[in-house]
Image 1 (spheres, rainbow, N blue to C red):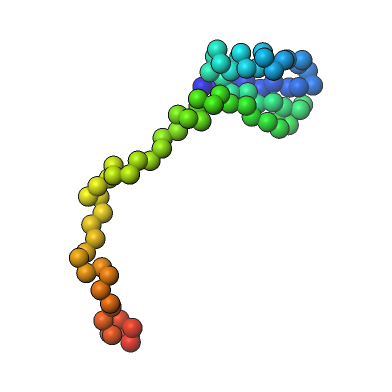
Image 2: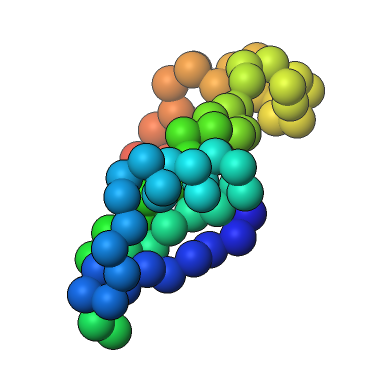
Length: 79
């Protein structure tokens, strides 16, 4: 994905032109006011491309003892 900075003080670009630029070229747009960025416009597809964790992918990666829920011995509490 490419990034394009657009200064709103120097450019009169329409919203449809912005959307076209984003859609056709897979571009994220950073809107600036002079040198100061104030907004970032990204295609929604790039948000959906993030990896969503799925349950069960790392089965067996962690092992739990059979007695994990047993009470701790008195020595543990008294020392």
